[in-house]
Image (cartoon, rainbow over all chains, first blue to last red; front, side):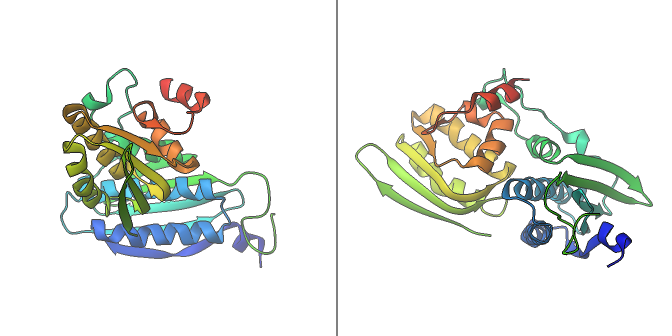
Length: 157
Length: 114
């Protein structure tokens, strides 16, 4: 396997309709990617959670329940596992909906909307968003850190 | 991804044991099942030891349950909150509001407060 191939190992893309019913397919995709990358349970959970929250947001607030498509791509680099979420909804930066929990406000008075985005952003090590060519693109990644190779059988570069 | 719910009564409480995942797909039905117990003012112990995943949709359900319990006088406690669920609940401040049968980690409480 060439060095380039090791660096840029990718999973096939996943295209699903922008419906809540498709979130299970998205979860399976991320968990399969995490398994292939040999992520530990906690890191796999955080990546899955973040992708779940962001794609739920796309369905509910991006497309506003209307028809649409979500495209996922994922892969493993030498020291991280990433998932790219793309949709054709109107421009929507997930971070705009972020609501940090307010510790001083009693739980019964808190707004709950925005917690998902907060969870997503706190769960991953890297997050970026761009609106390019009419597409919303969110990029999420968790670092795999030092330790055993997560790239493939031929080991770390 | 599914969620199964089993209910048993002990002298002290109604124990609701959940198995599966609490996501946007399953949280609605969970709320429907819990609300009658909460409205009846029961002492409810929700056993999460066989729950492998919870998202903000599940937190929303717990929040609604908590609010209703404040009105009805029900007591709701959580048990079997594993490491990953604890992460989700602590970074959103939920651990501070539900009593659990395990001691909360002070380090995570501090992270919530900052």
